[in-house]
Length: 256
Image (cartoon, rainbow, N blue to C red; front, side, top):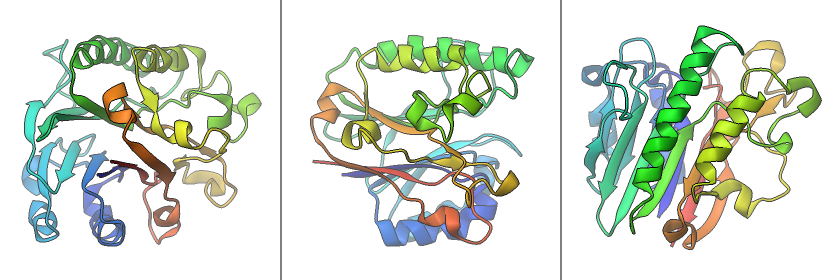
C-alpha cells in the first residue's frame, strides 16, 4: 500500500497539480491538508473519476483536511477530541478494511513563539498527544500523517543555528512532537533515510526552494504493527518545482 501526505495550500489552486501527481504516482491513499474550502466546494467528482473515495472536513478560507483512498473508508473522528469549542478543521481519522487506521492532521503554524497562536498550537499538541495515546492502544495498523509544523531534529532544517528558537524549530514545539513519537511511533522517512538532509516545505519568500532553505515538517508516522511492513519512504520534490506550486511537497511511504 502506498500512502502519501501533502499540504496542498488550497485545493482550488492546486487541483490540477494534485490530479497530475496522483496520476503519475498512483498512491492508494492521500492525506491532504490546508484545503481552504468547505466540503461542498471540494472537487470530489474529479477524484472519483481517478478511482478514489473522499472523506474530508472543510472550512472556508482556512485549514481543511481530507483522506482520499481507493477503498472506501469509515470516519472515526472528524475533529480532534478534547475541545468541543475548537471548530478549526484540522483533524480526520478513518478506518480501512484489514485493520488499518489512518489519522490526518494539520497542526497550527503558531505564527511566533510567545504569541496567542503559539499558545493555541501548544494546547493543540497536548490534546493530540492525549488522543494519540488512546488511538495507539489497539492492535490496528496505525499510520498518522500530515503537516505537523515542527522540524524535530537539526538535520530537518536547512541551518539549525539560524532556525533554533524560532517558530517551527523552538524547544517547546520539538518537545511536544517528540512526546507523541515517544508513545511508540516510527518516523517513516527518517527510519528509511537516516542521514538524509531533505525537506518537505520551503517558504515562498526569498527564493526558499531555489536556495533549498527548507524544513522537514510533514511526516508519516507508523505504529509497530504498520512499521514492520515499511518498504520505502521518500519526499517527492518534483511538484514543488511546478508553476504556482504549493509551498509543501508530497511525502510518500510504501508498506507491504
